Image 1 (cartoon, rainbow, N blue to C red):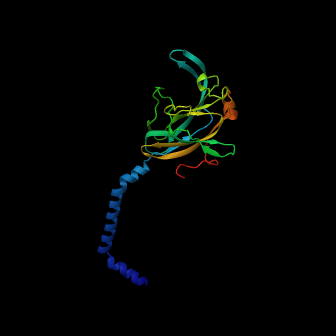
Image 2 (tube, rainbow, N blue to C red):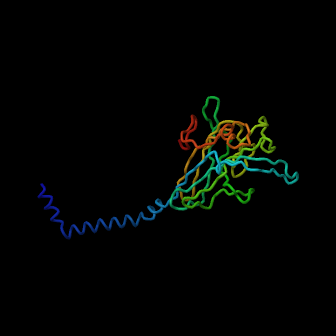
Image 3 (cartoon, rainbow, N blue to C red):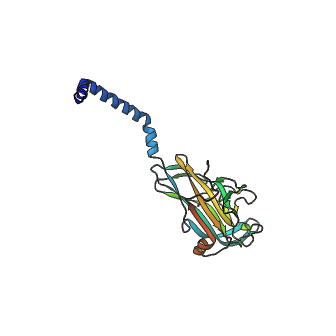
Length: 249
């Protein structure tokens, strides 16, 4: 049998074997030519990640003043800002990056999370916009190994008259930093335990979905460590709590 195999190869050599090798090389070159751009695009694709830590620079206590045109300054105090850090861990530059708050869940008495029916999905605001009345919603780009903060939530001193909700006077409420302010206080989180689904995407990157748990106890502390240890819990969770399902499931 071995002699027959060797004899078969001998029949192909040398010209026929060279033709086979040439044909295979030509086919490989055609495949590379057809799919080169797609392969390079996938290799150079940006990869987005999301971070949230209950400490600076993700969570900050900043001075603030509430000003009305006719009344002037009506309140001065401090506000906590909770921010997501969006980073590009891929090779290529991420273009037109957006952070989309897609669904909101609240924990009920049965310790299961149910969707908040009147929540309005929309993009969040990128941090440090030059014009507060025209916030940045689509970041033009995030380069490789760079990142950018996106505002998620603010929690004000309850003395702030613009952050008071009926039946919750004297308690902290959260304000989601959405691209526009929906009517009926639908961007407000009264004391409770929530899970917010966040989708981060770009024009040239696969979207990433994460879940942020937000636990608002309603109590205020001007000390950041005390606030985030005892009164305000924020974290990205890797295990979906009871009642929360991934989009599309």
